[in-house]
Length: 125
Image (spheres, rainbow, N blue to C red):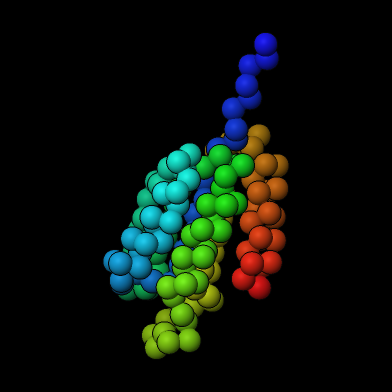
């Protein structure tokens, strides 16, 4: 019997434009809870810049769906058209990074990043 190959784990780091409303930040962070293999690493709200950084770890096979869940929650709760701040924002979800644990995982991270970009574009245009 062959040994099972462990799924490649990657880190996702996302920035979304709300760092002041705990109920929104909590809802976005909880959106990955449906994926049992995801592990939340950090949630860092920045009140001054009104942005939050959400970092989690997940298997490559799950991370695209988990990011989709986060994006769905972000776009449902954050509308930049009603934002009257002086600080510029590129979008409700303005940065998604896929980070490998080691250099050997770079091809997988690149493949996942492309999948995330295509998925978000197709879903949210």
